[in-house]
Amino acid sequence: MRFVIIEDDPSVRKIMINIIEKYKLGTVVAECGDGWEAESIITEYAPDVALVDLLLPGQDGVELIRKLKETKIETSWIMISESTSQPMITKAYQTGIDFYIHKPINVLEIVSVIGKVEESRRLRQVMSLISQTTARYVGPGGRAVAPDDNTKKNRLNRVFSDLGIIGEAGVKNIHQLAQLVNLRLADGHSQSYQLHELYQELSQEIGQDVKTIEQRVRRAIAKAMQNVANMGIEDYHNDKFEMYSGALFDFKEIRQEMAFIQGKGSYRGKINIKKFLEGLLFLAAE
Image (cartoon, rainbow, N blue to C red):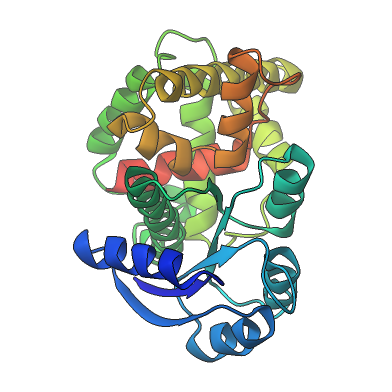
């Protein structure tokens, strides 16, 4: 991956460059320490990932990212700051960052977070490929059918087992919904499908009430989030935690769930059913 580092402390920039080079995470194509200069540098280089300090001369990191995201640039954003202010961190996530890292720099955290960002970018690419390639497989009635269904089903069952929800009533419905999403992606509807349409279609197919299906699905995914958050509390660098927290959930919501479990937050993390379903397809396609 191609990186740009925006940080007003040269020593911190050097540390991050050394980490990226030592662990072969990618190439640093540009660096600077000023918020105004950063805007033109990121626009020019269009990096895969930008590591941005929150407090910068000229304009701060939040304002910088807000402006650049309006240009529809496809860069992923990692914010780095000494600030532990929850309102400030929340504002940063609302701007559209992918991760927030606290100073002082921790090598393992930098490597882990960059790995999650890479996984997330791969997810988007794979979902795009799925929508382009599965349309080649067409079954009766012109409906697309994915190849190697048994292999994918086994992979999904392994994921459900890892998440600790294999026995949940909603798992079967989740699998059925994932198949419906796959069909829509194959037909080129990667952005336009609505969850309520999936629930209605599944309800008609299996003869069950829409509300019942939705409740079962939400309960199962919420349980999965809780279990993944517990993995992270026990071992933040656990391989399964690193994979599932980024592929199936919004990482900021996983952090919120972790905080709630530890008694540091007043509300639980929120699930994103679309992301969960599309993440399952990504994992099944690997």
